[in-house]
Image (cartoon, rainbow, N blue to C red; front, side, top):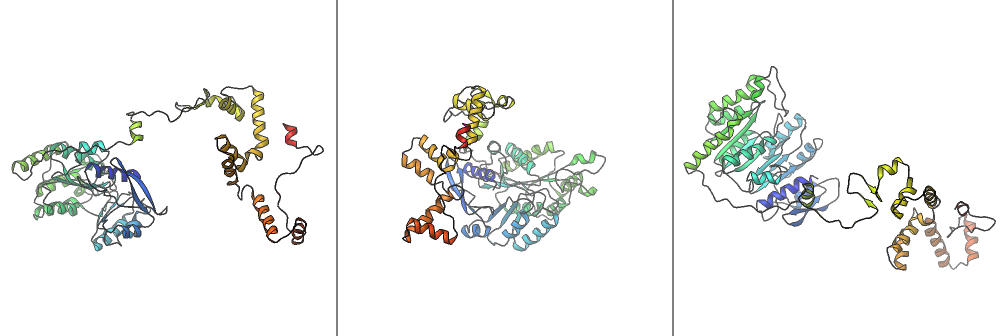
Length: 487
């Protein structure tokens, strides 16, 4: 159910000082409807989990964004199902490896429904001060360092999810921060394109500067060049296509993404960077110069009064999970109880100070283990054999059966007689004590019919039914129990 990703989103909501969480519901078809516990700051909250998407949509009519964490085997079907609901206006598909023909079908369906799909093969997107998709932005320390808890003035679109985190870092260092960031995914056919998001940024008055990070492979960047030439993008656009090192290699190279391969000179990163620069984008000489280029344009916008600097307000601290803090060695917690016979704090389990590897290598067996646990020392070998013999002769009888065992455990815990008996009686069932239940039903029926014992026995004989018994066979001097002889 991607519980960690949802918790990451809720932590981001909290640090952005949202009053209510951005996540309203989850769907998981493998279980029934239930509620999942999460943290929202210091408080614990319950988020409903539904078996069907239809029910989740019905119960939460205001939800308009769906994050599809399904695997590549079911992500397509889940997205097609989501497109049936008019209230869903944006879908993020995280899964990698979705067949290209399926993705192209989704593009057509999404265009017909007027829905924006981010992905597939995407980390998602982020809108500082508002909400984020999945694990976008990385760990909380990175989010705080990149000042993603409040909006800036720079919007970016990238193919790579990893490089989008790098953009978060760079933009926070040389500008007043990110306003919105989207990673469209590295597949050959992303469901939404650079142009789709760049036009959104152009039409958003709060975006003052745009950054685009393309890569080797495909021709989508040339469509951006046409938007620049046609004057449809007027805001400053800083652009760079990664993969320029491919020009130094003797043959064609497939980079990390499925779409990151140049099939022609036009698809190389160097060719795209030249075209973008000629179209009017601000293109640095190298990726290392990207931050300098951004800083120069940002300072010009501030000087021209197009960006107003605001006072920085410290965000609230997000509590660290206990398990994570303990793993980092930041806290220590006293033991709830300490055992003098078993110690599992080290790399190897110890029974009364004896390593478990030594117990196994010397073949101490169950008798030896019980001598260490019960008597806190190693008993002689004959005591091992006696303990094991007791286990053998009682393994399927006496104190080993569930009713007797539960009664003994309850009594040893200090409970009263009635409670101890009840704990044993409640474990009588089909797998243990079935004869008792059947005998009780037969005797009760005979009593209700007014039969005396003799009449009851004759009736059962005529019907050819066995009479279930209670208790055990009575032993005598001439029929001695073999268990007693063994002991």
